[in-house]
Length: 285
Image (cartoon, rainbow, N blue to C red; front, top):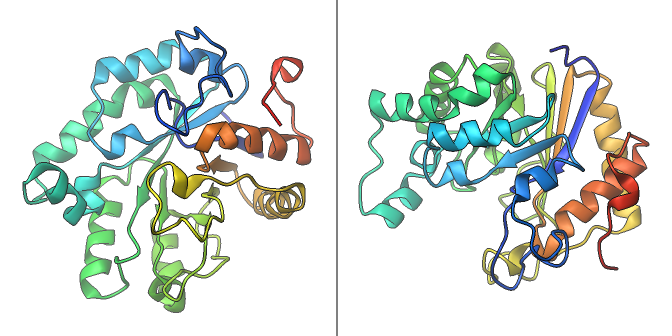
């Protein structure tokens, strides 16, 4: 498939069935039984977050392929065992010692996406504590070498990476995309803009809920709706990046009560891109 000039806009995850921030009744009509199929009527890409917690079962990945139209692209978040060893240990009680079996387990899980042509990228997200010291650079290099057959998007959150001029050149060596993130800013935060390092661009919009960023939970932290002026700002950034990229991904992670698909639709309109089933797309004000 020719990716030249493509802009792909979607959300980080598509299934939020429970809790205060559910999408049911906000994005999904009552009784929706096939959420991914419904989601793909409006958007041409999605970022899979469940793969961060466990490698996908190939049968599940095959189902994703079947339930989406031709041309739909998935990006998948790399398993936390590779990027968040402390979180992995807390969740499982096991040390995050990486083996070749772990690598093969993850690759086998995403193989149906790759074989079908619906594999967009692997998102490799690191925590703010991941710094550009010798150990951090060793870990990053190992991941780039291990998963180099895929398009890689690298999300770094600590300013030591953007403060180090060697980072951009290092990522360019592997044609790895440096993820541009929008989120609340703190003393340790990475620069607001990072250089282009590959033939792809990748944006993640987490919202700007500074007040709840640390004291909130996985729902209230992302309780944020981008305003029209903020969408215009993001639109200019995405448009600029797409001019120098074969493909551009932009995902909204402000998932609380379906703010993410609402803002994804806003960005599509701001960029004047075709909007699938636009007349059927309704979200509450």
